[in-house]
Amino acid sequence: MKSLSRRRNVKQTATDCPGTPFLWKIVETDSGKHVGFGLGTMHLPPGLVLTEEAYISIINAVEDSCNIYGEINLLDPTVTAEIQECMAPLEENAATIADIPDDDVRAAYEAKLMEVVTMGPDDDALVDSLYQALLQLPLLVVEQFIVYSNTPEYEEYLLQTFAGMPPEALDVALLSLGRVAGGVEEVSTQCDVLKGLYPTPEELDVSSLLLVLNQTLSDQITSYKCGDIENFVALQESLYSSTFEENSEFEDIILDDRNEQMAAAIAEILETSDERVLFAFGNAHWLLGDKSLSILLNDYGYSLEHVPAYGKDDAEDLSNERCGVRFNAENGVFELIEANSTNSHVQKNSTSNASGSSAPTPNLSQSPGTSPVSSDKSEMPPQNSSSTYKAWVSSFLFAMSYIFLSNW
Image (cartoon, rainbow, N blue to C red; front, side, top):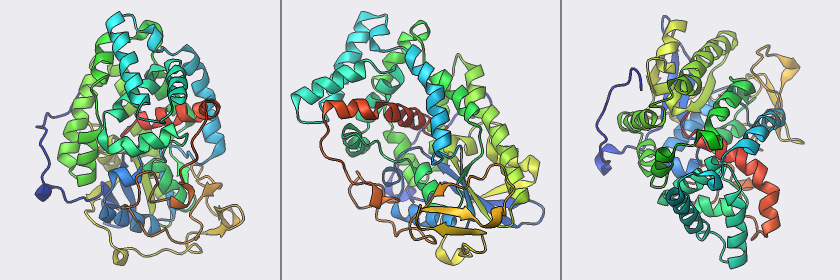
């Protein structure tokens, strides 16, 4: 990968695992004024990747921000519909396990997939039904099942997925808590990324398929949860080098080109915002390469200051009135008062926590099957029949594709 230093991958110990968030203040370089926050995320459940202390700091930053922006606003039904429309032809033409040209590799995938599905429902008929259904899905989805099954920390969330309810990622959870959620990217940009993630049968690379069989997210989760920026970057550099070694053009699409668009959007939003704003994007956007957001924002007159902890006393505790919004208890959304924002990135139909002012007290010790951010919505559904799997497969494909971008 271009312009990235090589670092040693170090094992974590209790003394170098402070559990701090990947949270930065965005500061006007000339004046020193604190105008917003940058949050590097993993597109995984909050209870999996955050310590309680990190979660509290993030929530305090959310409460100290009038607007929360993700890469795209996955709470907007129009946005998700457009993404799914973009994915439909990709799924139709995507390679499946049956398209793997090497007999041994194909057999290894089939065996691994059976191993994965037997972790789910304790019912032979359901296991077989799920196995047959997954055989027909794009390899991208199958690979994600494999990677998650290789990640012990993810086991309870994998079971939740088998029950028909893929877990909510940290980014989506934060959008649901913040005032006036929005996105900084166009759906077409995300579609360009997705196009590179769904190989056709003719594009399959047997050597990369073999690597997936033993991949795990454990090291990334540990480094992220510890707040170890150096080690996390080293892991991401290694991942990018192996993933994009022979495809620098897609590397530009998935990271560098998007970062340039994101930096411009951040600057536009900050220039038109009277209050602080929080931006929650995949961690790699903030940290990797010579076109990371931490570098690009300098050109717009902003710098990042790492925040190991952000306490309640550090926050201004902005009110809904000061932020120009009101909470509509009937539909559970924040609405702009007199459309006081002219920013094209803001979406009015953002959902939020029912309190209308503050986020729930975190409880990361609860079962991993529920999100600490939205525990009121995360009850496990009853055991599903095979027909239920067919009903949620479309939304599941979308969730898996988004989570695959992990830190991107």
